[in-house]
Structures are given as structure tokens and as C-alpha cells.
Length: 278
Image (tube, rainbow, N blue to C red; front, side):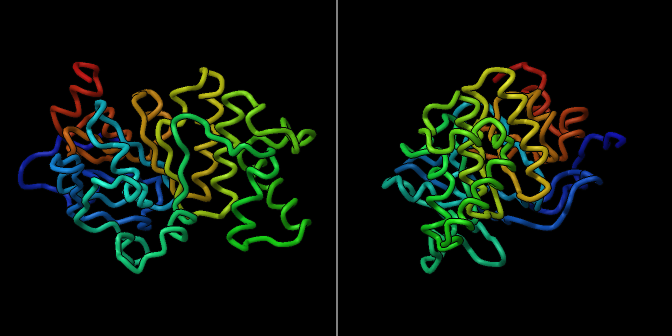
């Protein structure tokens, strides 16, 4: 795709939209964020964020440490509610419903918006139970045959089945770091979410495991919307359809990834991507 001209005054995109569109990507809306602000006590961590996240795409959140990427990610499934000092204003909307509404079922929300953390965190259970436990609790499966089928499908979708099919009743913690992270991804997709949030999912992994997870993200976006935080610019360029650049709690630029990395619209984004700071 031909690089778009550098963005200039008077041609501002519609609020929440990228400066240019990735023609190969789906443009159906998954999550709509408007005027989102967040405080930790008296300290404002997110400032007037506006962004549309598209279905069945990978959106990468980049920016220097402490700029609000992970805080924003946790807004999408209300993980910040677990922090007593947090106060949130603004709209985070899925299917026309504000996820922060008092009537929103947080458990149901987190089933629809799964999370994979920076450090693999398998449950202290067997590989099988890591996958089957949550679907059973959500009444997605009941009979043993249904559980077996779901466990196999989730592990296959996570690219792990052939490595663990003969040791399903061994502890999840017995796997290697890369395998544990894929187990956590399998656990997330087993409850049939719409969105998967990934907070630096490869930062603790070796290069081979990192490449495996990146390939997996490319396959999973055929089924799920993925939003990932990364400090690795090469990774963002490889896996993301869209990229949002955060700085000091604000979204400075949001663009399709090819244009962001070849012809960023802002000097700040250009400086960060080219390694002048960060």
C-alpha cells in the first residue's frame, strides 16, 4: 500500500479513527473508546483517549514505559477495578453497551474480553484443567466428552496440542516458558471470547518462543480481536494491522501499521519508532 502523505492541519481524521486505513483489514467495530480518563489517586494516567478498535485485527499499543499502555489495556475488561485508588471517566463501549456501567456483569465481560499477561501464569492445576475449568464454571460444557473436545480444540488453536496431548494430566507449570504462555492463550480462548488482550506476551520468552507466539497471533486474528502491548518495534511491525502510539497518558498517533512505520504523521511517533528516545 502506498504511504499516505504526512498528516497536516485541516485534514484531521474522525475522532477515534486511524489517519489512514489498512485496506486488507476488517473495519467492523469491536470496541469504541471516547474521552477516556483515568486517575490513580490524584495522578492522571490516561487523558482523553479516543480510539476505535476493529474486529479480527491485531492492534499494537506502543510507547515508552509508564505512558499508559497497560493501564489502557486493563480498562477494556475492567481489570483496573481491582485497584482501590482508580477513578475512571469516559466511555468504553462494546455492542453499544458501556462496559463501565454499574449493571455490567464484570465476570461476563471478562469472559468476552480475555487477558494474557506478561509472565505466563498457569493455574496450579493439570494442563487439562487449565483449559476445562473456566468453560465448566461458565456452563459452556458439561459432559466429559464436550470438555475433552473443547480442551483439544483450544490446545490445537494455541499450537500446543501435539506437544502436550500425551501429558494432559501433568501440571501446567511443568511446561517450558513458551509452552506455558501458549497454555495461557489456550485458556483464554477456551471460553470463546470476542477480544484477547495481551500485555507484552513475549517479553519473558526466548526468540524461538517469541516467533511461535507471533505466528499464533497472526492465526488467531482470523477468529478474535487482539490488542497487544509491546516495547518491541519490530514485533509491532510484524504482527499488527494497526498501531497506537502512547505518550504521557495520551494517544499521540493512531494509524495502520504500515503507514505508522514508514511515514508517521507526528514527529513524536517518528522519533520513538526510529529510536531517538524511549
